[in-house]
Image 1 (spheres, rainbow, N blue to C red):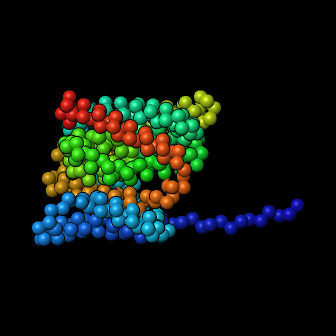
Image 2 (cartoon, rainbow, N blue to C red; image 1 turned 180 degrees about the vertical axis):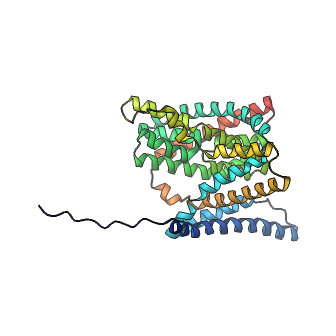
Length: 361
């Protein structure tokens, strides 16, 4: 019997090397974000000096548009991809720092109303997306991924659910592509609809937090309307995110009961594993702000750091959206997602308008 041949092992990558690999992409996020700020400022100054009346295009949209142009015209070079992938870290950091702008009483007051709306939104979205998936004869687990992605928190929910129900990679890629495409569309349509309907900052922010799937896009959609709308969009979206563990657990138990997923033996550990930890960071900073731990200047600095973190996030939203790759995923998941998102947007808009009249959001 021939002796076995030992294959060469790749040496482990050091922490310093991993860090260095992030620098080009993070620098690209920063450059795009700063370019968005400069465009907003200089275009407004130019228009003012020439006595033009033009709509103000926020830096948020400029950063997203620049990222979209780079990703879809030139493509994203491999050297930038590790750093660009950190946009989710900047998103979570921005949300945690944003806690300094919320007193705990405000969080509870707004959260108690939004929590009721979130429960209704999640239940309605799951039921309707499941109905649509069956109507279009999608694979059952693909339907589950689309339903959870639309109801809870977009790509993060899809990834968490994929492992819990042992879905195929193909199903998750279909669902992620559909959610990303529809999230990009919401950035351009939601602010227009909000202004057309003359929604208040709070009503619009609640709607964006309820209806937009990904946290990054929900934050951006709120910021494109106003700073106050962005704050409430983050709060409502964070409330949705906090429930991800319970939704994923329910689907994991369902698929395990059908013999198509591993049984959940420790439900408490499962919930803690799926719970988004940045929500706790947001609440901790809010508690510290409530008890006066931060001075007025420190609160201002934390708020500014939050805006810069979001700026990197918005640049990443554009860079990670490649429409050519999404087009290859097929039409039926997009059809289900498109119809479902329109219905969910209309349903949640009606919820918010009703709640605004009852509770004065």
